[in-house]
Length: 384
Image (cartoon, rainbow, N blue to C red; front, side):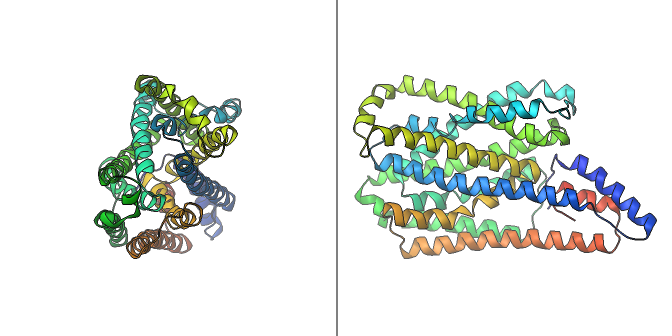
């Protein structure tokens, strides 16, 4: 894969230095410590993304099922948990090795970039809220698979992503998976609880939100590649989560008051099936889960690419619908089952391509290939 990763600058120097020492000693040696640290970060980000995304989706559905009805409130919790990351940001800022390097003449645009990302995130989260309100969790989760197809298009134009037969196969399968759900909408259980026009709204807003979020991730990768020095990985990821989330939170608060939904919050809390305490806890834990998920997503964008982070997020697709069937009584009919199989197949196809890239790079390194190849592989998110 040819996706540019801003974290590779420091690692590349280490890899080249190690390769030169290996040539002098007659052996090709790779810095195992850097290798392990990279995989440790990737593993942590993957765990955050999968756990956070699954929990946030299920809690969001729980909010609606137990009496919640405020779309702006459901949107607010997707960004309002950002203060939880402030201690982490302060910790990174106090580190001695925190430097403000990079392309300084471009960094002055970061405040405007954060503002733009925050506005985009507000609109995107609102569309997701509509989708989660009008669709069963299983349908909603599988429709989110279209993020990968949209992200592939944006990555091609914005991040110089190259495609292989396995990646194209992955995109086709995921697109067919989502299309099956659209064709099956007339027979979906949603018709008994919501009007078909609401189902259509939920379908369109979820697909639209997937497209918007894919654009958001590709633009973030573009920002990381051009404005963020390689050594600032942890700080950059946290900053990119906090500042746009703060803007999105302000936008949601304005939306709550402008729409008049603030008048209904008190009554909604009283009417919540599980009680006021459960109402507050549901919102709080949903906010926490979204922050965990977003931190994992942005970490993978920084370390590898926006497309890779989207591929990992599809891992939650088989998990969330199964849990939704158990917890919320969603029906897993034949069409949804086929759509799920296609989504998983698409994910496996992409992962297999990543495996081939890794193996090919490792073989070149083992054969004593040029250190520049290894540096380029690291820049693509591949480990030698």
